[in-house]
Structure formats: C-alpha cells, structure tokens
Length: 107
Image 1: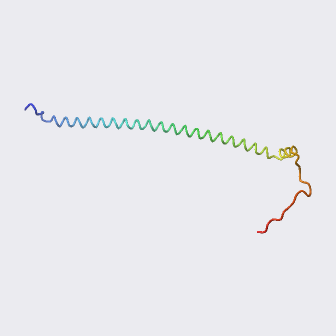
Image 2: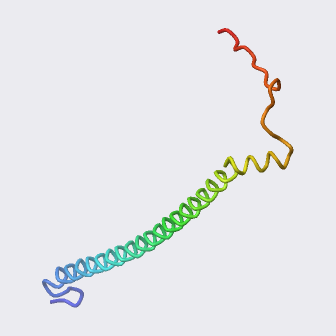
C-alpha cells in the first residue's frame, strides 16, 4: 500500500458515515421545526381563544344594555308615564271640533 492511498473499504465507510450524519442532522432539524410549529400553533390557539372570550363578553354586555334600554323604552311609553308628561306640558285629550279628518287620495 502506498502512502497516498486509503485502505480498501475506508472511502465507502466514510461515505456511509457521512450520509448517516447528514440524515441525523436532517432528522434533528425536522424535529426542531415540528416542535417550533407546535409551539406557534399553541400560541395561535390561545390567542384565538382569548379573542373569542372577549367577543362573548362584549356580546353579553351589549345584550344586557339592550335589555335595560327596552325596559326604559317600555317605561317611557307606558300609558301612566305618557299621561303624566301630557299633564306636565298642558296637553290633554282632543275636544270635539279639534280633530279634522281628511279624505284619502284616490289611487
């Protein structure tokens, strides 16, 4: 064997080790990539859940406000309240002769 030549089978063994090393590096990188993707998806899921919770709270708050406004409207339009306001402003039922009826236009 001369000085510049490698032992028989060594080049093939080195090539096999090189391929195995690259495959191991690729698998580790792939596993790292999958783990990062998993963490990112978990963060996104948590963010979406928080957004949904905020939207549900807003809906509940608005629904309560609508209910309060409906109660206030019903109170303001009640016959008793309308009568009190009419008396306060000097209004009352129409007297005979105050109401004028106009004929409906012919179509």
